[in-house]
Amino acid sequence: MTAGVMEVTVVRARGLKNTELFGKMDPYVVIQYKNEERRSTTGQRKRRTVLSRMQCCICIQGQGGHNPMWNENFKFEVEYKAGGEEQHKLLLKLMDHDTFTHDDHLGQATIYLEELFEEGVENGKAEIHAQKYRVVSSNQTYHGEIEVGVTFTINAGKGSMKGSMSVAHKHENGGHKKESLT
Figure (tube, rainbow, N blue to C red):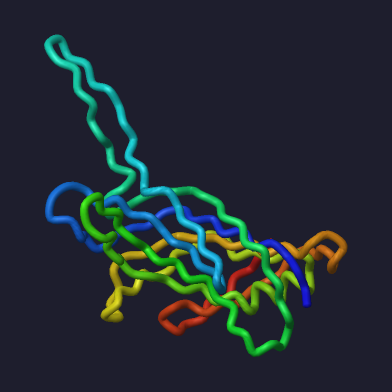
């Protein structure tokens, strides 16, 4: 069994389904690996003050809404056993924060991690550069995309670092994509 650290970078989402009748959505992401969960902040909105001769107001410019931006990192301790029957996947649940009712489920994306962990064990470190994954709603339709990167580094003293590597990983829609990693 190999122990390491998986770092997940949640960059942004685009084209999320609107669940609000009034106002803007306040999306956030619940990142789940096995029985551990991490939660992003709510997609922030930038505030700026506008001054005119007769009034002062605060205008909100969207970083939330349908196209939120997070740029947040989350770490998970990982124990990986090659050839085990356990399925290693990262589940990203997109939610919309509501003040007076239950939060709305916007959809989710899944990243399969088996190849990433195998490469990390072999080379000491492996990375899936930030890329877009489709957000799938509960009725199996696509509602936007989320951009995420994942790095797996084995704990010190395990394996060796090598130069270039490639990782093929499975997308939620069943396709595979192979990319070169450095």
